[in-house]
Image 1: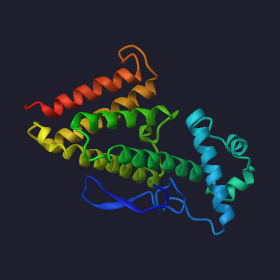
Image 2 (image 1 turned 30 degrees about the horizontal axis):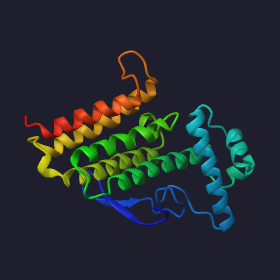
Image 3 (image 1 turned 120 degrees about the vertical axis):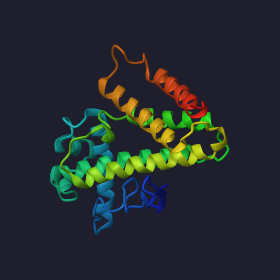
Image 4 (image 1 turned 30 degrees about the vertical axis):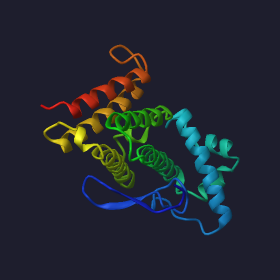
Length: 229
């Protein structure tokens, strides 16, 4: 999706835009549109560089100097297009979340996927996206940025909506007495497991690899959904 206006239904039943910003990869409304086309191109160039710096170096390495070097745009030029470092950080996190939302929706789009395939695609998408980031936006719990808090909440809603829709195409395979509670449990278990494993960076008590974690979570999730209580 690039610049389109798709909607997704969240846990609260409302519909809102996924992407659809003036700039591909951003959620509508979190970044004001520059007036000049040249400024829009520069903003995208800066954002691509900033996303690379954040994924590679994390929050501590997210400096205007590093972003300037990666983008080829002066620090003054960056400040001229974004509301300081906080505004740029918000936009980059928004871009990371939007990419995950769109990628998951695309991977789960096939109506002929069996339940096990849906679960596997879901856990694979999460693990790959989280592994690409030094620190994933969904793993950051402390922030004074209310707009970013709302954005992260909506991301979880949209991700769950995509997962729920795909799983319920195979509703006849689900044997749990409370499918909605079971789906929420699987969603948060898988998301939380990958975020925790990534933040700890491996170690005693954790699976030997991300691939093993994917396999175990897929098996456990399918068994939980298909086994009657």
